[in-house]
Amino acid sequence: MKNQNQPSLRTPMLIVGSRLFYERAFPAGMKEHFDLHYFDHKGFYHNPGLLESAYQNLEEIVAEIEIFRQNFGLEKFFLFGHSGHAYMTLEYAKSFPNQILGLVLCGCSPDLSPKSHLAAENYFTQLADENRKQIFEQDMAGLFSKIQAEPDLRFTHFVLCQKAKNWFNPNYDAAWLWKDVPTHLPTLDYVWGKLFRDYEVCQNLEKITFPVLFLQGKYDFVAGPASSWESIISKLPDVKESIFELSGHYPMVDEPEAFLEVLCHWTNNLIN
Image (cartoon, rainbow, N blue to C red; front, top):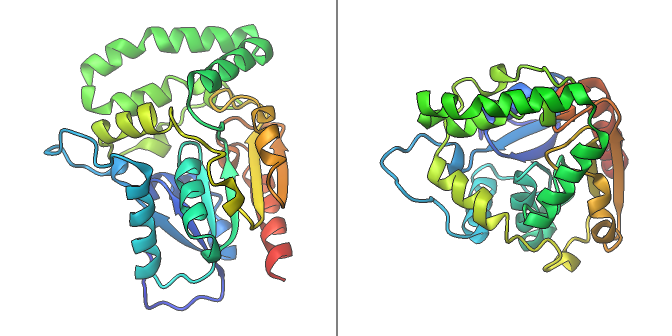
């Protein structure tokens, strides 16, 4: 957590997701350019006593983000959402558009519906080489035994066994990113499995009147093709797109220098 009483001349950026994970994932130079605030939602809490999802709808998450914003006195800030967290940031931005300097959507499909999953699967089938496909099949074949051995780490094992779909290098070991990151499985299952599956990205899209930066890795076989966003992006008034040619689902890790350059160039143009 940031010190609430510590002044900063850097532009505030609110990142939704696991603080521990994204502090590791972001380039070191991020904190030199931005005053970073990480919102930990309850999917990344250790709460074994809660046997059901901590959230029943996205509005509850939006309300918690707003309380977080108020507690840190953030008036105008950039909002960053990666992967499923993009939907959380989109809904917050639609509810509180006057707070947003700009919205960054990174490594995400329009929703997690069967249609989006199929688009991602077809993208993998068409673009991935045989080596990548073999690595994926081998990893997934070993997933069940990993989950049996450590059921509390089911989410983490699933993500790590998808390395051939997550990374430009299909053999990349991302265990360092997930080490000691707590997960609350009932919340993750419900939010990712139902709320994001049924998410309607175009609902209240007219509220997005501020600039949007869309970032995607060419080899992101989790989110699938960036072209899935074409009809949606066309409805937004100010969108910049950047495709990272040597990245998968995590361009901030695969191409940290290029990622930071794109982000800083876009934000500087908006505030200077």
